[in-house]
Image (cartoon, rainbow, N blue to C red; front, side):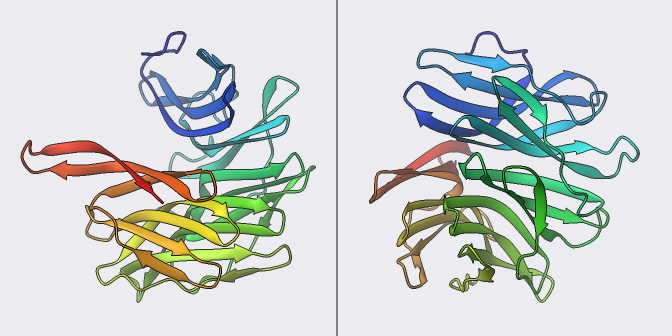
Length: 290
């Protein structure tokens, strides 16, 4: 249990800078039909929530990603549009000088859900997710880039309904995003794109027979990238490995993988859940890859 938190809350993302600095982001639920942003800091011994603003103080506010780089910390998500209960606005919080503020974003689509953020420094950050014209329209990939002064929207190559779930920025000229795209309008397949400092290009991934989506991507080195997720039917892990030339599917224990983290140049952890048939319930799952 964590002390000092508002209660009725949840954390969905974490980023560790060092043994004495880590950040976690999520939501708290102070009342009916309302949620507030929640960011907590680890100082080496305790977690402490910090005051954070909301895009819509009287409505829903959600944070799905967090990243720290230098003296800047970012947290991203969405908030209910105050003018329409059916649409969402991108929400980006920036921490500089010890205080959090809302960082203005361009209005890309009527509804935008930011899912992840990563940064290489105070003047280079990426926030990704998806958006739509309305809640019944196909998803469109959304990528926003911070140049040290403003966020701007960047187009990604996509020929179908595509949503982005994660981003990994190894350097300003080496950025990966991953998620899923629909083939023929119904078959979900992994989606990966790469930025080389000049342009984005989609990178081919193995076809998954029963469909699949990627939920996290981590770089152990420029030639050793791991993307994790789950197959379309759920319950079967999806692990893709970039070897510097192509993406290959790796064999892994069956599970629904939600997140991953690099540990040095050759090891990574993946976490999620899997169904325990003996207990007939879901169990937490962790996996280490080398």
